[in-house]
Amino acid sequence: MIIKDVSRCGFVCLFLLTSGGWFFYSEKMAWSVLAGGLLALVSFALSVRNVRRLTDGVMADDDFARQIARGKRETWKCILGFFLRLAVMAFVLLPLIKHKWVEVFGLVVGLSVVPLAISVIAVVMAGRLFLHGR
Image (cartoon, rainbow, N blue to C red):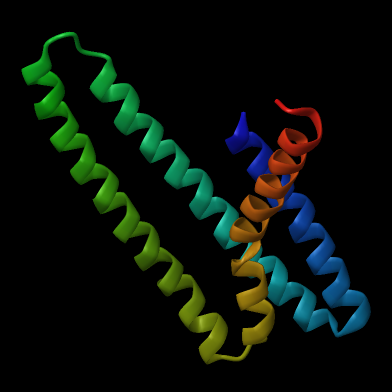
């Protein structure tokens, strides 16, 4: 549930930041924010999928020894997936920055959409807890 909230909030933040970049700065800034935000949200979704695969794979077996063996395999797959995502992001970002198709500041703002969404969700949840006691 929290993961879906973070994803939804991420898309809302991306829309607001892209719109702000468009209205207050330039079209290139808006496209830069959008490019960075989409990269971040796709990477986040793939990370969630890998971690779910890791936990589901380990918990699917009743035998402890097989859980450990499966956990080690899935952990390495998760780590490899992280580095593959990082390499793909570098591969995508390099030409965008090198050929100056995007503004670096807008790209950084877009890439920070997921941490921003996590922060917003955390503040909302803390507010609910403080105000309603649940």
